[in-house]
Image (tube, rainbow, N blue to C red; front, side):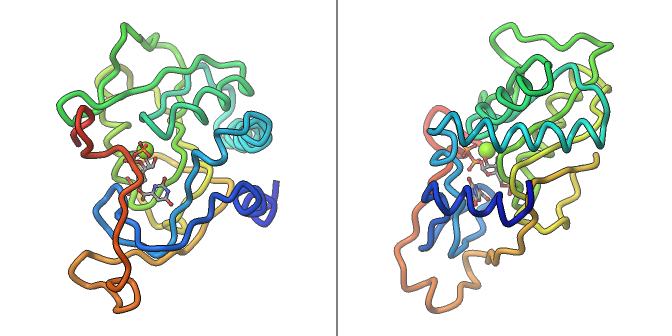
Length: 197
Ligand SMILES: O=P(O)(O)OC[C@H]1O[C@H](OP(=O)(O)OP(=O)(O)O)[C@H](O)[C@@H]1O
Ligand SMILES: O=C(O)c1cc(=O)[nH]c(=O)[nH]1
Ligand SMILES: [Mg+2]
C-alpha cells in the first residue's frame, strides 16, 4: 500500500481532523489523525493492518507476539497479529504506567513486535517498550500506521510505518496565533481519570 493510498483511507474515513489538538505528549497541533474513525470500520482496518503486517514481516521476519499500548494500539495490534498469525496482547496504564495486566504473559522464546497506531514524539511507544522489557528482551522491532515524526522519533528499536508525515506540533507556550485563537481539545486517553499518565 502506498503512502497516498494510506492517506486516502484516512481521508475517506473522515479521520484527518483540523482544529487545535492537545496531543498525548502535551504538544499542540492543528492536525489530528482520529484513528478510531479507521478502527470503527473492520474492513478498512483489515486493509491497513494487512499492509502493516506485510511490511513488518518483510523487515523483521516471523513474529510470534504483538504487544500494543492501550487504548489506540489495541485494535491495530489485534488485527496486525491476526494477519501475522501471531498472538495479540496489550499493556494498559495502571497508576499512569503501562503494564501487562489481566494475566497476560509473553513466552521468553517468542519474537515480539510492538504495534502502535500513531507515533508523534515516540514517547508512548518508548513507555510501552519499557514495560515489555520487564517481561522479555526479544523485541525485534516496532510498527505503526502513521509516523508523524517523519522518521525522527527514536524508539530504540527499528520502526516500520505505512506512512511518514511531517505535521507541525508546538509547545503550549509557543503557539502560532491562528492556533491560539481556537479552543483546544484533547482526544486521547493519557491523563484522563482512571488512565492517569
Ligand atoms: O508518540 P507520542 O507523542 O507518544 O504520541 C502518540 C500516542 O498518542 C496517542 O495515544 P494517547 O496517549 O493520546 O491515547 P489513546 O491511545 O487512548 O488514543 C496514540 O495512540 C499514540 O499512543
Ligand atoms: O500525538 C498524539 O497524541 C496523536 C496524534 C494523532 O494524530 N493522532 C492520535 O491519535 N494521537
Ligand atoms: Mg495511544
